[in-house]
Image (tube, rainbow, N blue to C red):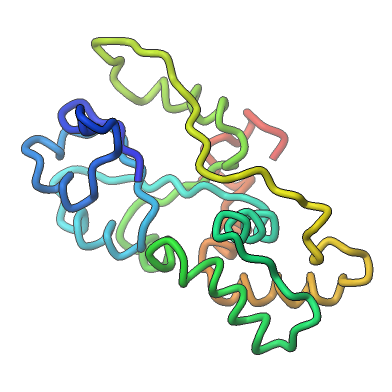
Length: 202
């Protein structure tokens, strides 16, 4: 979880992000301009469904297979492309729903909040867009990139082999079935709800 907020941000002793539960116990957290929280989608509903101010969710969208392999890499896990379909499904779940606190997105969120999307790889454009929406910091600091995943060896990922085209299609089908964000992003990117429409090639 990463938090950008005027009244409650990072632990001054460890420089590590506060937990979502700690955020809601922090007086004045309602004054936050922007919160990033990569955990189960239910946390958003439980915390903000009766919020006194409008809440807009920004869903980062990536190519679903690239995102899956990145998450598998983060878990130090490799897909077995020779596995049968039930095993493939378990492998996909291991890198998605079973990792990182569960499913991070559910279509129910779109019924409760204004929900928009952006290309997760267009970080500079997203920062530029948000700079027009957020209040300037009183004290400007240099942003420091913090790597959260090790470099991928894409040539060692069997899913990209030409001989595994059917496996690739099956894995994409499985990811789409179990991860609501894939279908949402397919409909959202390039639409009027795409935050960066016109700013990127999407």
